[in-house]
Length: 315
Ligand SMILES: Cc1cc2nc3c(=O)[nH]c(=O)nc-3n(C[C@H](O)[C@H](O)[C@H](O)COP(=O)(O)OP(=O)(O)OC[C@H]3O[C@@H](n4cnc5c(N)ncnc54)[C@H](O)[C@@H]3O)c2cc1C
Image 1 (cartoon, helix red, strand yellow):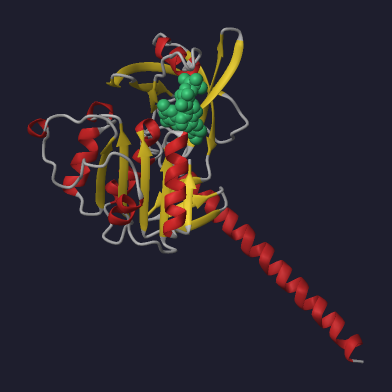
Image 2: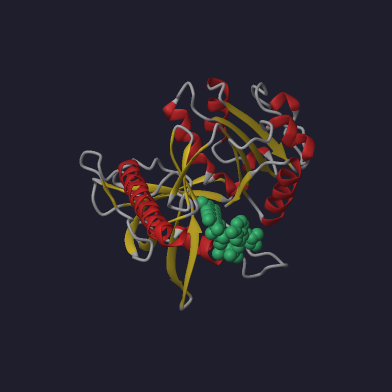
């Protein structure tokens, strides 16, 4: 008896649960999609995101190229229409494709321009030179460095697991929104690129309850630091941004340094004490982002895992 009466009731209950779940999922997907469109410009007045489907290749034009450091360049690309935004979130990346020496090659890059920037976008790229260990090193970056202005290049995107929305919210795996109170970042050299637009967004928002930012940025020397003035300015003007510059090679003379107030420059390599002295304590609402050379990424991930950080993302 019990069986006969309870079965339809259980099934109805299950159907209701499934229907509610589907509804909730659809509503979440809809709102995330709208949030992304708004953030990347579609719903802003006169703004149209250029990249909407990562499987679709599109063409942009190189319009300027300048040196940032001795081996890093800032490339600016024009979008076809002046009301186009690139269509990616801060922290996401795009794919550049080119035919180099009769081979189609691609590499990923994290644009550093603001997501809402219209008509153009920018990439900071390290140019690798061949060396005795790796005589073919730098095929793509050297090709880009030699590319004349007004050349076209193929791009696609957006790609990436983490895109910054606003006020500590990240779009994760293009389907969930996660909120973090603190963003703890470790970058090496050109690995600053996915962090820079996130830092710029948070600084621009200037929310009293916005996320706290800590950046450990490692380079060989002071001359290798990308956007040094910008980062130091933020560190000076925003209590919510904590900057630690780490150098692995000889530093400039003490007297040559300017304003060593909010950053430290004494570490030779990253270690556990650097992380625990710099980063907020491991908690569920702390997101650790890592981007740099392979060795640094592995070391940083190991240290952060052993310190107990629950959310670690390596770009
Ligand atoms: C998601 C993502 C975003 C990236 N964003 C940028 C960016 O904004 N600016 C930028 O300059 N580079 C970025 N890179 C690295 C870029 O994709 C190329 O690997 C780099 O330009 C070297 O390519 P190449 O052909 O010139 O040299 P290659 O000969 O292919 O590589 C040169 C050297 O680069 C290092 N390298 C290769 N791949 C990586 C990697 N994935 N991460 C770190 N180091 C690597 C190795 O030491 C290698 O010896 C990104 C990589 C990924 C995966």
